[in-house]
Length: 152
Image 1: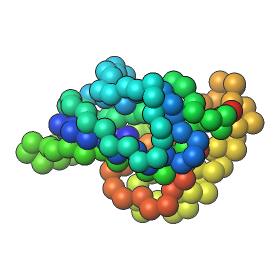
Image 2 (image 1 turned 60 degrees about the vertical axis):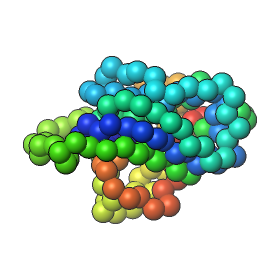
Image 3 (image 1 turned 180 degrees about the vertical axis):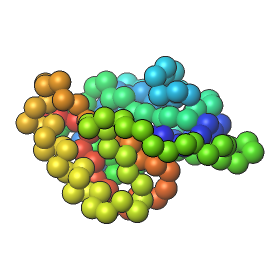
Image 4 (image 1 turned 90 degrees about the horizontal axis):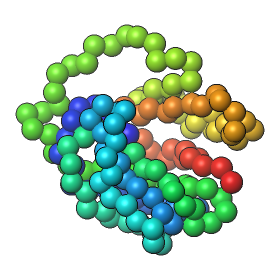
């Protein structure tokens, strides 16, 4: 998750579907390249989890390390909570090309679910290939988006 600017993080809330991770890490990064572990577990029961985290980060990710079922990992919600000192920070200049396999969404993007499903179908049939896709979501509220994040 790209928060758009650095924030002092305090909590992460996860709402797992039946296919959840038994073991996973919540990782934080200031630059999207170097990651530190803010939380880890090897005994998750799935369902709704509220996790206490601490750290300054712009990026937050979940790394699944062991499935609880044979069906990969599936989240209904992944929420990040914290504060920003002095507001949202400076405006980041637009433009540039992140490449053909990087997809950036914001809450007003039309047919997000259709695009996410299309990417999943491509990845599912070539999951061991080299053509990986990155889905980036700008800060905002996204309602009823179901993103498959693993394969079995």
